[in-house]
Image (cartoon, rainbow, N blue to C red):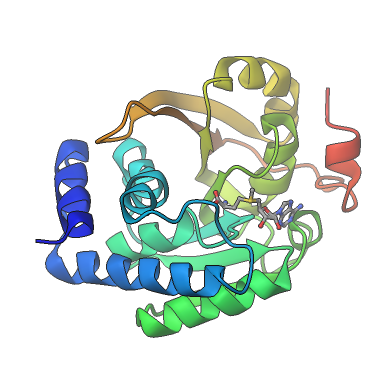
Amino acid sequence: MSLMNKILKDGCHEFQIEINDQQVQKLIKYKDILIDWNKKMNLTSIEEEKDVAIKHFLDSISCLKVKNVTKGKLIDVGTGAGFPGIPIKVMRSDIRLTLLDALNKRLDFLKEVCDQLDLKEVEFVHGRAEDYGQLEGHREQYDYAAARAVAPLNVLVEYCLPFVKVGGFFICQKGPQLKEELKEAKKAIDLLGGKPVEEQVVKLPFSDIEHRIVIIEKVKHTPTKYPRKAGKPSKNPIR
Ligand code: SAM
């Protein structure tokens, strides 16, 4: 058994999430494409096989440990090289995935990955979250939004909550500063129609890395003025 195969199987076992051989093979193929494309464009600073398996794949899959996403539509906002969206889609083929990023070059990479991994029902959106959050086909259309390493929480909720339907959830991956970020973002979360319903510390298998995930439920509609124009949320976060 290859190192990656072992890490993915044992890691998922630790998360109590089932993973089959086909899913493992898809993730290994994803790693190969990532490493190959990373030679010609800046996709990730994490290249060691073991690190890709733990810090990208298991970290993305850990979202499912906290919120067991099944079916429905999920948008990964600021997906970059596909995290956490693509590993979630590999594990849950019945979700309809939208990958959104402001950098077009990354979208080319994501299309190649989804094509080679034979992932169906994936939509690729090149643009800013602030713009798409106001568009009819995207605003309040998703059962779930997810994001990792995109912006401070008070900014990120303005990017993500407008996409989520009332009754849906925003799955937000954060580092050790989550408590402080939640305090800072309290007003924004409330104003945008969200309510934090769960917070978990996730220890990544085979490492001493601890991450945090907060689940924010969409409990009421986002006022039409949000998200504000591109650039405004980061320049002038809701306080
Ligand atoms: N989520 C990925 C991960 O965890 O590996 C990528 C993280 S990377 C640090 C942040 C990504 O968010 C970049 O690809 C950037 O282009 C995208 N991004 C930042 N602000 C954005 C916005 N307002 N709208 C769309 N994409 C955005």
